[in-house]
Amino acid sequence: MKIDLYLIRHGKTEYNEEKRYAGCKTDCSISEAGRKEVEENKENGRYPKEPYMIFRSPMKRAEETAEIIYPGEEKTVIEDIREIDFGTFEGKNYDELNGGELYQKWIDSGGKMPFPEGESIEDYTKRVLKGIEAVKKAVAEKAAKDGLSDSEEPVPVAVVCHGGTIMVMKYCIYGGDYFNYLAENGECVKISL
Image (tube, rainbow, N blue to C red; front, side):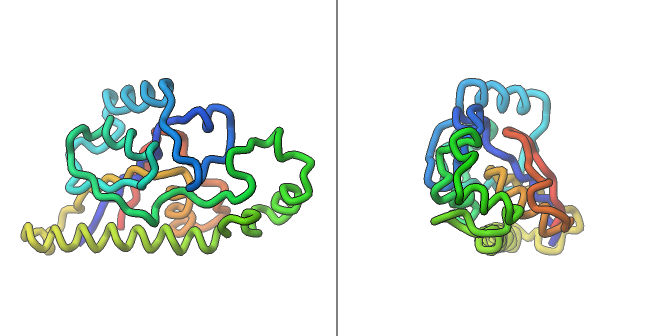
């Protein structure tokens, strides 16, 4: 069975507006500007209208975004697709971190070393892929019950998540540099599985 996975980055938060690291330890809401942007994207048809299933990160910003796009629809929470753990960088921005020894070491590593007291890209990638496997399993189980397992048509599935989640998926599929795949807030990226 084929799946068209629509990865939707949550709406903008105040942390995003201030260019702060907002990972899995910061459970913030989307801002008014973020809400408006998601509503406009919805009106402009940027999200799948009737996905077969909807999944979301457990973070508040993903929950609120999913509810704007798919009000009242059933949404399955997948813990492993929450944002990366930025460790001691959490809540800080470049101006606050610039010049710090740990930040400079992380920059010099090209982002390859783990975030201090946080996750490495490798561990985060494993976690996200585990979450996507859970999505695929849930879709396959529902499709089997609905008699769609042998369908030639791809099943559209929406996943409201984070920039890091999208980066992992694009990096795993296309290769190259993980940091080249940052999606904008409210952006929808289609990946066929």
